[in-house]
Image (tube, rainbow, N blue to C red; front, side):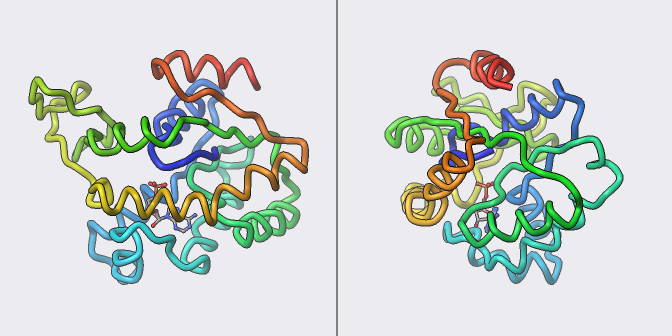
Length: 205
Ligand code: AMP
């Protein structure tokens, strides 16, 4: 899954992996969990994640390689948040080749910058079940799915959002062209309801 921060990659990855019956991995979720648990790995990643920079590639490669080679990924899988730059894409090619697998499709969720900034500044995540909500003026602070407490991600502050968008434009956006040239890119309109976007993605597959 490709797309700017806030385009809906995580939400859609969850839906698509459910509908296709394949596992997905989110590098962002793994990094946040490690930071929360205060592991050595989390300590190395914290500063980058919280300032909106990409963590060094080497910190990500093992996670992805272990996942691709795991039993649960044997019948297919979905990657959310990886690759994030050309070096990661090239490394992914080598990992897949070694595992005898290949990418079928790259789903690029497209939403314009203005909507992204609005979405991210209002985004809340459930501390317990990780469900994403858009905080509304009603002031509801409880998760609609499990009743857990909603929290704001540290990198969803306006200055960090701008930094993440800049990093996306500079480092991640070139992957759109990269995968278009490989003939596996699908552009998906990421506006409208969550269900509508899922439907568009499923139709494109
Ligand atoms: P995300 O949840 O995908 O928005 O990722 C949150 C943050 O985690 C990013 O801003 C990066 O700091 C870090 N991150 C996630 N995936 C990667 C990756 N593939 N390479 C480097 N940093 C990553």
